[in-house]
Image (cartoon, rainbow, N blue to C red; front, side, top):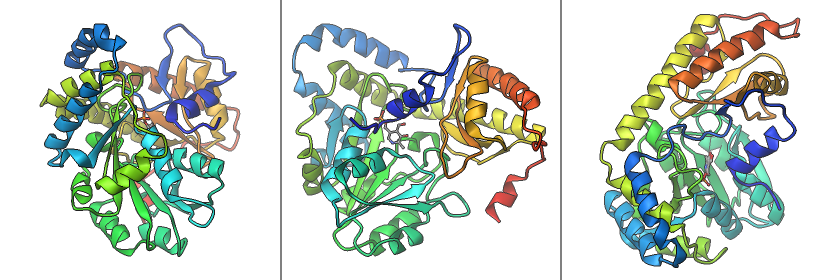
Length: 368
Ligand code: PLP
């Protein structure tokens, strides 16, 4: 069995690690500390007695509502138990030994794990200087790509690839290839959503999840959006997915809460900005993010920092080999971020690394 979800990656990193304290703070898996909204909790509770039946009409109700809110025809939307499933299935459907997967580095690894498992080549393309996906380099990477994977905002950097670049990629990609545009974190950002590109029958599969802004990582709900022939190819890899009835009900309730996205986006943006202001004042470097996570440069081997923070009850991570001194931090509640700051400053102070000296860092320099 290969790991292909954030949960599996995060658990793998934690394995064997000593975590201090009963009140550990989990900033290591890009979850939403708020959990499902009130209406979603009530809907899930009400759906518990219904859970004994194969209620596929709830999935249909969810798809119809999601489609109408996104100005899509219902046949352009498939519900899944999270977006990991359609992501892996897309790789299975469009990559093979001759058709490589093109991804960004650092980027979300799930698609690459599936490609590895099926024997398809994975080509990693470094992010551009502004931390967007370098779409020109991605196209140049192979004349016969099967699938280009773009997460915007990206995991782990939280940085956005703008719509013009996505449109350029669609216009210039290899013949017969498709683009998977992963919008898992779109609600936290100011990026222009791209569901309409799928509605226009482009060669794109847009993925959405309820694990992030909607706080339903453990409930499992997501959607794949594309023209029906692409959705069929993806669906055929695993057969039709029945989503948990509690999750579809919670998803419907969340979508009906008209102010939820703006409210939660603001909560996340405020906590993230407060953390960035503190990091800047203390001279720590980070990559400016538009998501619920960001990359922090600890200027020393990442694993030592992750272990030291865990011993103080603060789980952070994960790490990406291509940036060996950076660690991903998920944005928690303001209280959790206060605990993060205290522990992080302690860890940096106590670090054995003789070579480390905090430097005032200008993020503007990172874009030059
Ligand atoms: N895509 C990205 C970029 C992610 O970071 C994640 C999880 O962290 C997922 C997809 C999958 O999430 P889920 O399967 O919970 O919908």
